[in-house]
Image 1 (tube, rainbow, N blue to C red):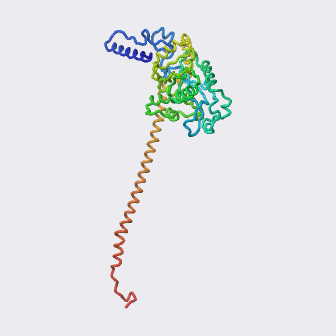
Image 2 (image 1 turned 30 degrees about the horizontal axis):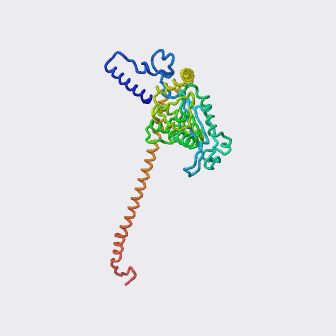
Length: 409
């Protein structure tokens, strides 16, 4: 059984026992989290004095405290393409990785990763591809190959993401990781990728589930829903990833927890494990991950670096929150909700105005139609009934007798 499932069942059993204890008025009020084997990490909110003194980091007063990961890396690749050709062999030509510091809610553009990639199957870009992505032939000719780009990303990842931090990828939909990276480059071209590319968060699906949309919606619609506007050039890989990162931060501040991880099967011989960096996926594949299990995996992998990072990160985050108090309070959630409610109200008013205009237009057309039908009916009655009677009356009128006044004798 997966540790995520075991921990979930253990939590449910402990919660049930706690409820039973309270109803039976037992003398113990011990929480299952404070018992032996409960959560112990630098994110712990337990009330135990020793844990608070050594490991406690945040007080769960802000929605960002409830997130599982410390860093999220948003990927949105661009690939070679040809207009009206579904079978075109796509290759990645732009590879961005936009970094989100989850605890501060910052999209760190300055420390994000970005590189263009030189294609080899079709080294000459089509005019449609250049027009769509804005990437020129000179840019890809001077770019590294996909293998070299992966090595550059790997170096950036090790240098930028602090040792001991829990990090995961995110993308707008499954296409970047499932199709472009796994199917096209790993399975088709046999390009080796680190195993960390085999799990990610689907922002689009998570958004639909959290905000009760029946089907996932596009990036522009998600940004409008969060009262955001697209910043940059559409179909630029880095600009797309940057806006997805902004959306992810707004979702987290609105209370959405990224705890559903999509897992790509690791049954190919081309991937390799990035030594010293764990995977947080469920053993059986995609699904919800448990926060405590993720932290246990991180502690086992990083060891003392996990707690060292936690202490440094805690100080940096609390300092940032003191400098920007309005961004880190429950009032911020209320403000986001008010903004969302106002935007929804504006959309509803626009819809009602549009419906009223349509109704008025329909009524005017109906009135015009009735008036025209009435006029035609009146004309028909006149032609069929009134006019013949007047003609008959004119023909039947008798002639008057001649008189002297008329000049006739």
